[in-house]
Amino acid sequence: MTTEAGLIAPCGMNCAICLAHQRTKNHCPGCRGDDTMKQVSCKQCSITRCELLRATESVFCYECPKFPCRRLKDLDKRYRTKYGMSMLENLAFIRDNGLNAFAEKESERWRCPSCGATICVHRRVCPDCGEPRTDLGT
Image (cartoon, rainbow, N blue to C red):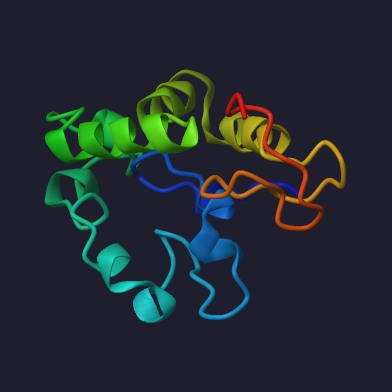
């Protein structure tokens, strides 16, 4: 699996590892994709709809004058606590190393060591072989 740069959301989320993107029924195209198949909460996301974000050259939150805003900090805290992933760390890596380097890193990080499938951030096991995620400390 290779993470496509277009699947990296403005907040730093890798949509390739999101449950909504990985499912076959009602497949979400990712935060930067067409709204047709997105959940209502994703369509109304205050981050992707942010006017300040649209004014940035990179279209990533790290360029925003309000970075990190309350919404992004709350999202980051929830994902760090529940899923072992940080949006703020992702954005810092993208800012410092570039989007392509981040996509390559993500492809490796979220690859199941047993079967090579893409692991979902929202699940504790590989969707293909059931191997437990090792980055969560069980």
